[in-house]
Length: 360
Image (tube, rainbow, N blue to C red; front, side):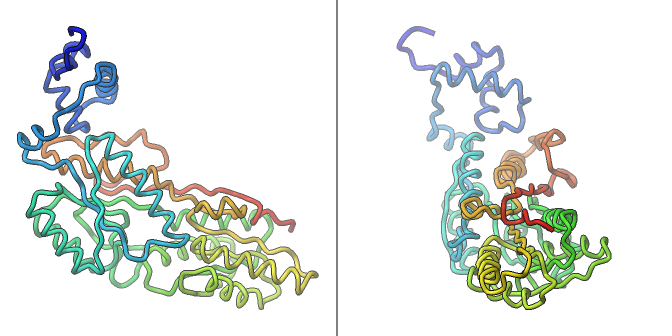
């Protein structure tokens, strides 16, 4: 290639020793290309400074190369930090795959479906990423009926609340195994000598919360211990109230919270108890989400591996955007289980900190 000449796709293909179609696949449908070949082509693209003409690509393919995602109205607070990390990871993975992410808002499912129709009618997006899945989700029904590519962060829970039997689904989803995470942290507490462990959970009917409680309950049952739950809505002050109620029982030595927000409240209640009843042993507290706040206050928490979730979401969406493409081989992906290459359950990771290191 002559100095000063703008690199073309043919230049990239020649330097990388592949066909122009392979270069096109790397740029448009990377799931089709073997990882080693894709890495070689991407290195040459960076070396030559090749830039794809996005406008021409859109005209040629009749695609926008944009995926839409609705940001939930109540995404703030400690729990909202998990969504923030997911969004960052999703945007990075999408960019690596030649896609962009468009964010929008809607007050409820009905308004979100209206937005789907508007965005698709103007060819602004090619597909969607859903969050906050719930039983009888009208968004999933609408997208299925209109044959729109999409993936959800969250399993479709059964409408009867049975966490042993998530609702059957044809659509692609990726989720975190909350049951495994809660069971792991409970077993760690028992191994440290705790026997009277109380779960601080959300009200019944939350698929995610019920799943986490099931993991805790399974661990307690396997050890021949009584499962005890105190329920509260999400929030630090609510967590403090629930923890105070649990600590009315003088035999309680550990609290497993369904979220970092409830756990932070529990930490506050445990510290207040230490001042008013110094004769009682130190109470261990754990959370779920591994938020930045958890790290700041040395709270043991379960990490949801949001980077893994985001990566799996894009991997599941890409084949839908490019009919005929193969789903990437995820047999090498650590900490994941697969079902027919359309459902991915990420195994969370326990991050132990000072809040659970108590002398028994």
